Length: 328
Image (cartoon, rainbow, N blue to C red; front, side):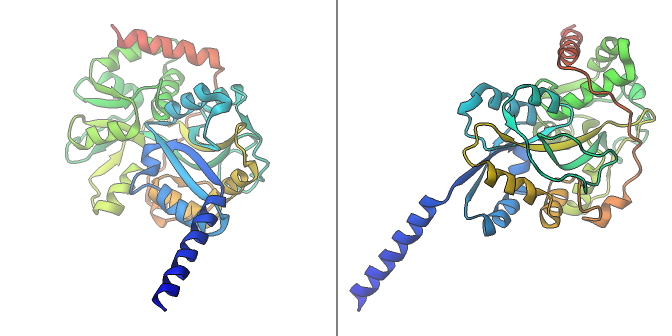
């Protein structure tokens, strides 16, 4: 009987192994905070795999621009089926690369101020860029971007616009507010910038260690501290000029060998269950379930700064100007 039992167990193990071997693997390139222990990826993976008959794998990078640069370098040899984590500011450059295919999803029901018309990338969350500070340490926060730039008494940290979507957002923000005077603004800002980090996780971590007074993040970031630490000491400065809105998106690579499974995942990202996970664990506003968590309605109103997307060559010029100012 024991021998028969062993044979039975062995057969089950072989069957399970064979089943796993026959399952397709869906590989998602994303940024590291999305895949962290407290990020959305672990819960999304478990939920999606309940019905997909697949193995969902997230591959993390330091930030969205770094991730996109990797896919651009790999080209048609990339292992990524999906790129998740660039935003509306990097999106035109990604489309120009011709490395992605149409999503073919209905996006008419999205909870965005402007109707979504892009046929390649699908939004999964959004939020306003903002500088976060601890109210115990900063009692007189800047009320505008120009005040932040001018106040040398405030130490700041932000992300490199060459590697980070958040840093790229500040690049656009400064140029939108300052126009032809952007280089002078960067020079002023450099005088009280502690460091420019590669990605959000690194820079926000440095801020929490007390290395700066403010850090570039999101208007929603204080909710993380309220939810996870029961700490309401953190706030996001509200600027008179208005704030740029980041819309994070996902797209299917042209190299993917299972585009239909990839589309199934993009559709899944917009379900109420996935939106709840993303909005709470990524601490960003949902694009579908407007009331994913009541706490979002308690945040102050951050006026949106009107913005016209520049072409790729203009972005290159802005990056060159930033680098020149930082090297002085």
